[in-house]
Length: 542
Image (cartoon, rainbow, N blue to C red):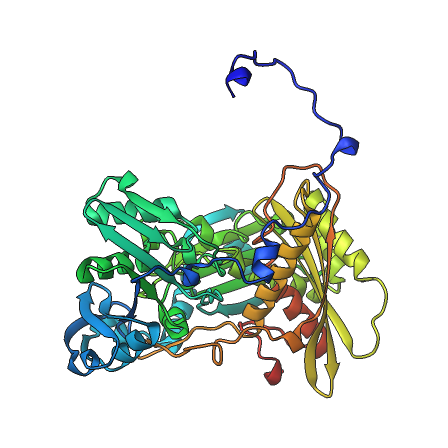
């Protein structure tokens, strides 16, 4: 280091030629593979220290609820229960083991003040959103005069889509270990934003930021859930450590995680598309209704771009002379967070479903129609062409097989999916997913493939099963029996192809998610003639 510091800074640098690269562009093994497959990797749930106690929390049954009173006498008598403490988020039970703390928590008698949240209901919310979608929202994008052209159009398609609240459901539920001393706070937790968490804890404890030390073990999944701007489970753990005066590990159960909030928001889209006599779209009015993930945490922008991304600025609008994108941002007492692929998790499903419907209305092949609309967008076009080629789009499928397509962009990368379904005895099965990605220069192709495979499984799970519903203010789902994940026997064949590219590198952990649901929905239309307007897709009802 000392010798290097004395060298003069070169004014020019000659880069290696690609043919001389040893690592870039060549698949490499993950450095953490060995410890993970052998069980040596330490996740937050694995953190253990001598004398460490375990804490669980009884949370209100509705969001925004408060404790009116509680009786912990029965819980205190359970062997292994160390103490019971009221904290801002509920009633904490600390025990020698998780089982003791859980039994103590279940034995509590709590009177709750449910507030206004008891009235929250998914069906009622959908009706309210539907009414809002009949009115003009704040304009995010506008060209021409779509309202006038729609009135004079030869035909108008007027459709509504709904997309439910979604839990992140990481395999490792939330947990946080906290050790407090007089002038220091030590934390062990899997988090995506340790700097934000450290600042929040320092503010809570009135400590200098450098007196909060956060160790981040491996994360057992996150998808946005461990990137909470509120640091709520970490703050909760610190409250327990402060109240008890003990070295504690907070553990959320699966039920705590599924019912604990911070979901992908529920959204409703209404689109009115006007057609000319030749079947070409000439006007498009698009209204989105839903909560803003960034306004929820204090962003004051009139329009949250994450609510409209994927519709606003969509390349298809270049070919539609009259269009508008409008937004109604709602205020609902359900905690929300970005979810893997953020706004495009809902907007791409709607846009790619509609473009498919527009193509069919005009008698066009869905791939050829997209090619025409994307002729000035070479990276979109490249992934579409590669996916179509590898899926043999131009060739007829065997009897009982059908396919659908979607194209999307996100995080600087471009992705196209072709999904093939089979129909046997009135049962539909996802058979094959062909995916093409342009992520710029692919440093580790094997890593790109792994992330895209993960995106597809995640996207199929959400498309087929993902749904959080509320009734009387309470979340109805509890665990993986009613918030299902894709099972191994349902897994289709996956094929991932990377477009050779020297463009700027993009991300691959999220952009492979949004196109899965619309490609599947479009394949289902090819198989059944039925358009999917609402998620999740219920194959048993088709």
